[in-house]
Length: 179
View 1 (tube, one colour):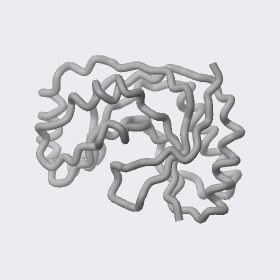
View 2 (tube, rainbow, N blue to C red; view 1 turned 120 degrees about the vertical axis):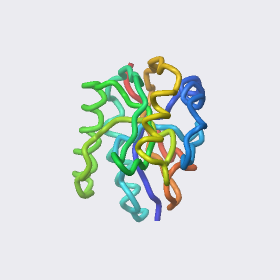
View 3 (cartoon, rainbow, N blue to C red; view 1 turned 180 degrees about the horizontal axis):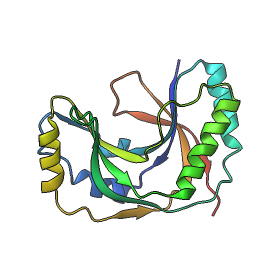
View 4 (tube, one colour; view 1 turned 135 degrees about the vertical axis):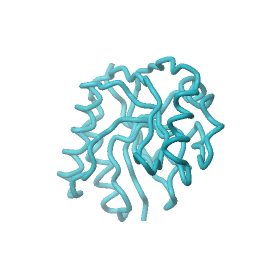
């Protein structure tokens, strides 16, 4: 049974720049740069029939327009018990529209609605045992975050093995975005 999600790939040059932020945070399990991505919609574990229907449904969104993505800052999820360090993305109406289209299309394919609010980001590390103070210090001591921009040419359907996250991820199918 594949575990699926949709997302945007991070170009190699942007991934390299993000990877330079690695290191120096206690309790961090750093994500390999080749597994950096922006999740659009987590689908979860599905059988082969549902996976095929999802792939076919997403094909209808492949003519969505290209847009710029801009990563602007470091942040963390989890508050007093941080669980992830991420690179945050500047709000983008085009990105939000693409994610909402994924949500609508996948609900039409029979999937339950996503219960979490869409917060676009690139996870850099999973955290275990890092204190909120450690994370705040790491973010404040990290070199100034120079914004990183790119224009994705496609979105993808990823699969992953059942794990605690962080990859490896496999591109099952890709869908071009219109220029």
